[in-house]
Length: 205
Image (cartoon, rainbow, N blue to C red):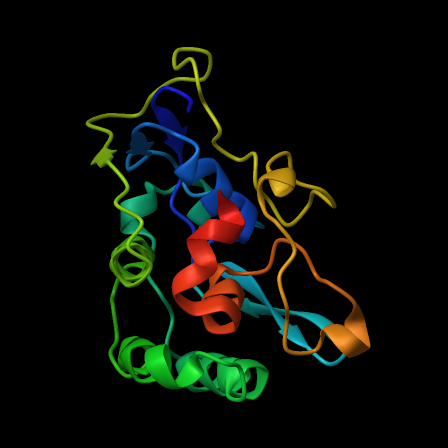
């Protein structure tokens, strides 16, 4: 087990992201950073018969990269929630454990959060409760400068990296379209939840 982990909040983070969370004694969520574009803060990957599919949350246009993360607002010009839910349903509707968790997840896609951070946090709490992760978390009281925290993993899990440092913490598990795509690592934690159910945490640890 590592000491406290400093990390940003993701949109239904990857299995590698959760591997890092579960390997820490306690977690500090960075709540005072400036928003960073092209990250998992507003996107995730799910499995399809053609491979990985990216689902991105549109944001109200502006200089988001210079904006405090808690001020970044979600755009609803298009019905992205319906698109994301249909993607999730197509990907996991026939997975072994969708019937146990699908209805609870769908509720999130029927309500409109104003801020991206609040949306991510509500899903973060749902995953923790649903998977019984018992993570010890706190929110940063101010922005923590680079080089100050001993276990700073901010921006270590990004779509730009082909491999993730914590991917080895996650054991391969049966996926819905594995016969067509082979095993796809570092998908959203939803993939593991719907495919392995209560045993999901065992594959991460």
